[in-house]
View (spheres, rainbow, N blue to C red):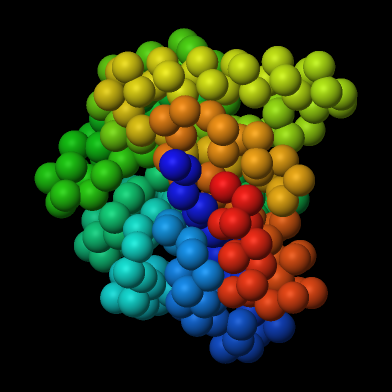
Length: 236
């Protein structure tokens, strides 16, 4: 059965905008785990839009389930994470202009750097993942680089114009997850996932973490963070 992963970056963004100590991502991670989340996710960026190094250090101490920290392919940030030792490092690209959300990685461009970082992570008993578009060739490239996991972008499914396209994209995702598993990699998924579409994604065989972000925060503003997490968990 798939696990729910919760992205804490919207929490950190609200805190950073108001230059306050609250809301605290660490506090919300505790509520999330109490609600049934089994993976805590954050994006350690070079700017101040999302979680910071101190957040990651605190999360490392208090998260009881699985701590997955995203980072760009940046030596300074990667070195910080190798020292803190989260359970997983997920390599992403960033949209510096419009969003706190990560964008997918071009493996052709960064293969050399990623190979070195993967080796360093494995030497420190840290699992590795990379955020990619749903493409078989890219999955094969990730397998050659010896990633432990993939994080597949679900946007083509979550933004489908009609039911036929949605079904087609869901079938494609199912095939890609199977292919990744045959290559020895686990698969997480993110990108526009809501309470309305998460149920279909949860039907995909061999899918590990389903990561929710903005939609969870919107719901939490109305009914509270722990209950919002419980509602998502109950669906999957």
